[in-house]
Length: 360
Ligand SMILES: *[C@@H]1O[C@H](CO)[C@@H](O)[C@H](O)[C@H]1NC(C)=O
Ligand SMILES: *[C@@H]1O[C@H](CO)[C@@H](O)[C@H](O)[C@H]1NC(C)=O
Ligand SMILES: *[C@@H]1O[C@H](CO)[C@@H](O)[C@H](O)[C@H]1NC(C)=O
Ligand SMILES: *[C@@H]1O[C@H](CO)[C@@H](O)[C@H](O)[C@H]1NC(C)=O
Ligand SMILES: *[C@@H]1O[C@H](CO)[C@@H](O)[C@H](O)[C@H]1NC(C)=O
Ligand SMILES: *[C@@H]1O[C@H](CO)[C@@H](O)[C@H](O)[C@H]1NC(C)=O
Ligand SMILES: *[C@@H]1O[C@H](CO)[C@@H](O)[C@H](O)[C@H]1NC(C)=O
Ligand SMILES: *[C@@H]1O[C@H](CO)[C@@H](O)[C@H](O)[C@H]1NC(C)=O
Ligand SMILES: *[C@@H]1O[C@H](CO)[C@@H](O)[C@H](O)[C@H]1NC(C)=O
Image 1: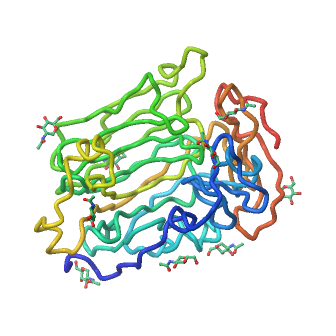
Image 2: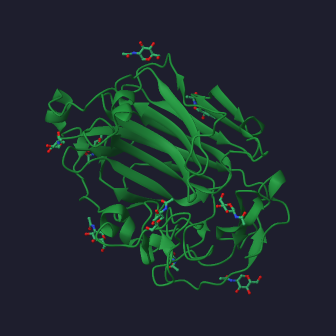
């Protein structure tokens, strides 16, 4: 415990927990009603915070029920303290200028080593911790300098996650601290053409900082460790029989997390993948009172296919550009929950398949 400055924040109820108390559910065949227009990442309908981070436009009442998603900005996020992280995602008003991150669930601390580090905590009682960026990235290069956990069943993750669940992952099952795993999901599913991949031979990922990079461009996705390429996926490699690319193409937030995979509510395959059940009697856990992962910095270099005009605030979804591929446009509308809803939309130039297709 004493290696951390004592800044632990209280547990934050997740949207899942809040809405499990009786909210209407949403999915591809059952959209949210107008009175609770926004579909949360966990498939529950609501208003307010439900319309921010992770709100699924395809399952919400209308395509523009979710608040616009704050546009990408180049940044180097450091964690000399946690003042840029808002402590309760369910109370966030959407102001991405005021906060760079929100705490979705769990507990964070800040260390006083290496210039300050964000510590993501995991406990038996409170579970894991997830922090999400308030701004989205629509293609770009994202690097997280982090130290992983080192405990079986405990997974450290640095991912991008879009509101329709296009996802790009770096994951670190704690039982093996010489490896990192990469994966992509397209609208919630692993594309047939790609599989999870393991990169080995790393110096201990618990003891050493490494730079893990997701270089996400419209036609190619490259994973790097310490500036060396370890995996490349081409969009053209992900085409299905109908010619639809199963390649992440929608704006995504950056998520940093530590999560308990080795628990009895996980599927057996998940427990095995993560390195077995968590040992809550581990000396590291009993000494500190938690498991943890440390993040020193996250850098973002945006690569929007068309740079946003000066007054652009956010991304919005539009009609499909090709089968099953949502269009993405820029807007100058407010991103605040209480902001004016209307705004001017502009094509975001989302790559070769996304031309001329907007207007909501
Ligand atoms: C976060 O906000 C929600 C909604 O008001 C509230 O129920 C919850 O207790 C808050 N959590 C914390 C840790 O303050
Ligand atoms: C979608 O939600 C409705 C209403 O809750 C439910 O009846 C239906 O089975 C769900 N469909 C899928 C595909 O999950
Ligand atoms: C958003 O936050 C910034 C920085 O704190 C502040 O200057 C601005 O007034 C806020 N915007 C609104 C609409 O509250
Ligand atoms: C942080 O560490 C520095 C030296 O590394 C020390 O001078 C300072 O007092 C520490 N701050 C806190 C809040 O512990
Ligand atoms: C970690 O994974 C690598 C690659 O799969 C393997 O060679 C190594 O033996 C594993 N180490 C442990 C401790 O399981
Ligand atoms: C990766 O390259 C960047 C930019 O050149 C540099 O700042 C950084 O130190 C490098 N990281 C490593 C681990 O070599
Ligand atoms: C699952 O784990 C929880 C907490 O560790 C424990 O309370 C519960 O009894 C366990 N359930 C089963 C079926 O093992
Ligand atoms: C657009 O794409 C979504 C998501 O892939 C799909 O569910 C929907 O049916 C498509 N809509 C049209 C009109 O093709
Ligand atoms: C968006 O831009 C249009 C002009 O193109 C302007 O009339 C409107 O007020 C702007 N909306 C916001 C919210 O700034």
